[in-house]
Image (cartoon, rainbow, N blue to C red):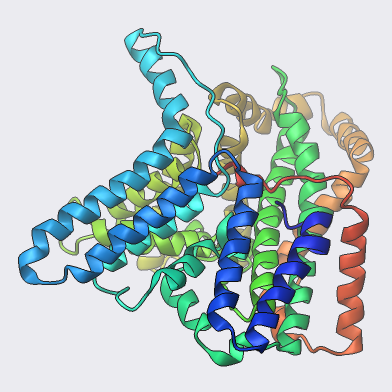
Length: 477
């Protein structure tokens, strides 16, 4: 089930919302939580019905392992706890590996060893990468003794809360569980509801008015890249794709945060104007922040060792981004994308440590250039397509080879042919670099007629466009 559909907005959400607060009104708090968990299970089953039994098994299996870890805190159980947490983590990784990486693994084994293992096209369950990270975090924290107080209902609310279940934000149990215990969060709060609807509408507009049209246009190019790609095509469609990915995921995050707010739950921010970063280190501190936080807490910090020659900051950064690349997809392009970003982050960290500052405008331009160049690897079907786009990006001779006047004429005609999408791309860039963020707008929000009219207009425009359902890009991860 997708947030930006009539079925979700006009049926699922009103029913779940009404039931939850009706039960809370009569102080049936346990029943209201069970209602929310069951609704979240139903929500997930609509998106991945075939995987749903595995999802249930994974959720309850991890709870059993986590509960055992929480109760085995005695020193004499140290070895057993290490074995148990290792088995639990490996089971999660194995499930993720089978559904997400088995085809890629067998394909490479066949190519390298000359074998003929049958390549079964396994359908990737939605959200598996996101909830797997949350389950692993739960096991690690249970191993550390940080989840003792959580019963099965608290745990299920943390894992399955439907606004963040599929594509995040990736939440920590310490952020979510306490909020369901505060009585003020269990009562109807009209200001929070109004704010939630506003933030949801902003996210919906990002998704439907910006991300979807840009994505469809760029995808049409990247799905059938010709042998020879012009400089204008390479840059235009890659910039378009870069913006569409940002607005798609940040739009989903806004919608999730808005839904959480309606239910009295504050979900963590996931974006902080990442395009306004002055280097790639800063960019990844502001882009997909909950993923960066997870990787930092559970990968980087466990690898980094001060004073160690091989486990220093830069090596830990490269390992972390290698994991990030593999997490994003099953393909060598994702591995290369992770390593490229790791190198760029290391460069940014080195320059920052040695106080080598670049003036802000050139720094913004260089960071944007890095974002776009790395996006090619991320979205290309294979390395051959990526290479074609890279060659096109720097084919100055093809554009300027016969002089400046013909080049200007080509640029003029390209702009005319791509006028509508060009205006949308410029609007997207203006929003990324100049417009207030959703967080800033939320802080200024007041439940008065002016803001409600603004919300109503956004939501109405989006509702009028919901006849065509387009999945979120990060569903494939």
